[in-house]
Length: 167
Image 1: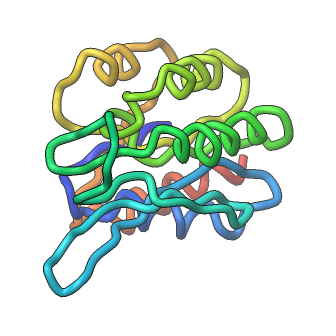
Image 2: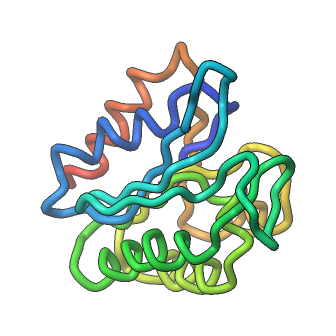
């Protein structure tokens, strides 16, 4: 099940709130914004088993850039990809927050994502709303349910996703 919506509608909040009660059955990662008095500064990746790292930050020195953010692909691979691989082996539900932004800089992330999607596991992921070849391919895959999230539909989508995880 994929959740799409505009920036700031609560995709990550929905993922956290739905998955936390089911952590024994679900694994993977979500992202959190890093903010200070100057606004959005970067993004932290967090796993459901407590690991985390700074994935992207303004001013981060990196050969990999996305807009004004330096990206640490090592953090994506050692924290995010590792959590997804562990969930694929050990859990019923694999959770990935935000396919189609920073994560597409990693070949290993794209490979494990395709492995997850082709697996019999339940997949709960947020996906970039704007068109992009990689995310558009994922959206077109068979047996892919896409839910559009907006602020006014948050409660309804949350209930639907919670019911889906319980099955």
